[in-house]
Amino acid sequence: MIDPLAEVVSLLQPQARYSKVVDGAGAWRVRRSESGQPFYCAVLDGACLLTVADREPIALRPGDFVLIPSAFGFTMSSLEPPAADDADSEPVMLADGVFRLGRQSGPAEARLLIGHCAFGSPDAALLVSLLPELVHVRGERRLATLVELVGEESRARRPARDVILAHLLEVLLIEALRSAAGTAASPGLLRGLADERLAVAIRHMHEGMTRPWTVAQLAREAALSRTVFFERFSNAVGVAPMEYLLAWRMARAKNLLRSKEGGVAEVARQVGYGSASAFSVAFARHVGQPPMRYARGQGD
Picture (spheres, rainbow, N blue to C red):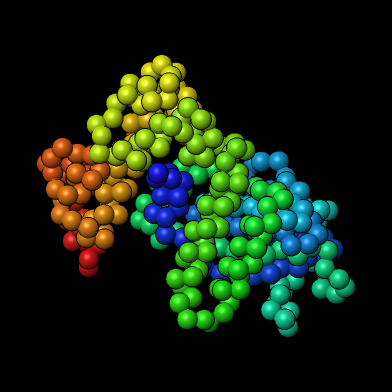
């Protein structure tokens, strides 16, 4: 059985950028606005505050894990942050490689393992749009262990380091996302999969991509009326059912063309088009260039 969430993460091609251990003491605050850079944080000890965009601040405790698939501005601080007009803190690297925020002497009051990763897929923006804006998981020790493994591997220079990191990050993202599947507040794939009726239709779209699906057929698979299914899917996932199916077909087609897995006719068949010409027209309209030109460009 095909797992839609695993497929999305696999196509994202996560890659390690860096990770580091950060200690905080006293009053401190850091603000980041690196749009599009996935950010994660595991609280190893102590506590801190996280504010993402216009959301209410979240008090993070030991064992908490946070993932922002496309960081668009966030603030982390001590539980009692500096005054609003005080300057933000600059991390200072200590002799043991740990970074320090706030008061430089005395014991740390919070210890965090934070990092950025990157998504190698040309369709990263599309795929990330299917994920929640913020994932906050509490009490999942497996996640903290995975993050520590990512941190250790990213700092080491072992053979096959990049291969190990790619697989670790895939596991980390899937574990974080499935742990939050029932609590995802923003529209996206997780909210769709958390709805038992919609999950049936989503899995059918992924498993039976070659079938000529209609909204009515998908509604029957979900045991809902056409109108209720359309509205429920659109509200949960954030896009209409056929728009989701088209976007997923095109993402799969681009991946097949990049990996040179068959010619245009074979790719068309694998993503549900009855003819190469119909696929070429849809692909050119969606991507902005014919599939053959796209495939040649990926080989340059």
